[in-house]
Image (cartoon, rainbow, N blue to C red):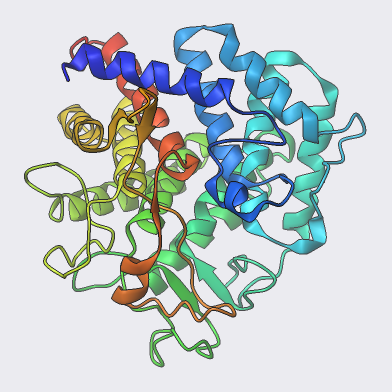
Length: 389
């Protein structure tokens, strides 16, 4: 496909996903579709709505805002309570959709969105923490920090504190990133392990470090996105902390580029094991990393030369995995459905585990990051940093 054809197919793909989805039946939430259970307030839908709101911001096409508003409004009641959401579940994944409340409140003025922010913020007030001060990933995973959780909670936490609490919790949010760098970064490679167990009791945890065994791509992508989104939410008021998040971000970006596939510009499911049988070039994590890099350029966290890297990853993904099926419908493949640590199914963080999880099409864990990357590329085109499609 030409560059213009790629953009046209991606726009067709977004329309296809929206036309086939509603708040109770999102076709992009493959886990929910496969489970057959009623839909709930969840981060997968939340990420897709974030992408649609960004598309509205960059294109001005009201269909994106209308869809996002209708979808989120279905769950948010007038008193600010959220249908199917339970504070005491203490699940960081359920904080992520609340990031959309800021934009929706700004754009619509609907007071229920403002009240719903307070509902979600109450979860963080009593969220269980490690001794170092990090939120547990979930109540059902005691003493554990996962890279994913930084993206799920910290941008909301930072934004809320800056807007409504005179930045009271901003240093707390920042220190959680510092802890992750100190405890979960591998000094030899510069990469970050997927999980950390403070208690060292989980079967996947290293007895000495508490870390899991491998560097899972999407977890690293979530962490990259968390760094850039949280720094944006913080702003320059806390200048040292603001610069430190950018430094961690830039350091990790340069580390990751050492592992980028030369031919496709993508990254492997387990980042540093390109030659292992069963490893593969994965969409969601590659898109998250490229999104973070492109946004980093827009926010001037990275030099302009990194824009071409993000763009090359975008076309690497679309050339390999964006196409039409036999029925002529657009699809995006190469998406790891899910990966975690622990639980009843003994997710042990081994290479065999990460390679063995299902690879699917059209799941928002891959689709939303690709769309977010697309919006950042459009922004860089508008600024004259990248060429027109």
